[in-house]
Length: 132
Image (cartoon, rainbow, N blue to C red; front, side, top):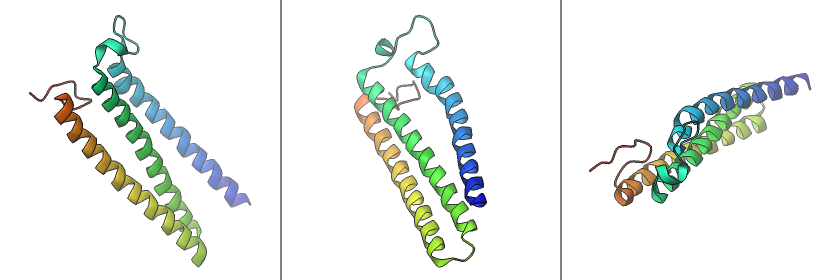
């Protein structure tokens, strides 16, 4: 019971640390794209609709990737704490395999969105620079 409580506290600490990192990322990167924190700019006028959709999809992929990394770490911790118990080892391997497949799918989705947005919008989302 004590070990399970420690593991839950560690996982909660990981989530809180991730939220702090993501908060800085959103504030500095995504917030500037949408015009938050700067006077005179509006999210509705600073981007076209296509650019807005591409940016929202990138943010969703970032969140999904972060969740997949957390699952990978949790699977690794479960593997370490399994102590040779076959059922727990298989459960941990299953968690890590699913997390890796999730990361692969997320990276491929990001590449597909980047290619499609470059073809349709005429610029890579997030760079602010047209490719023309």
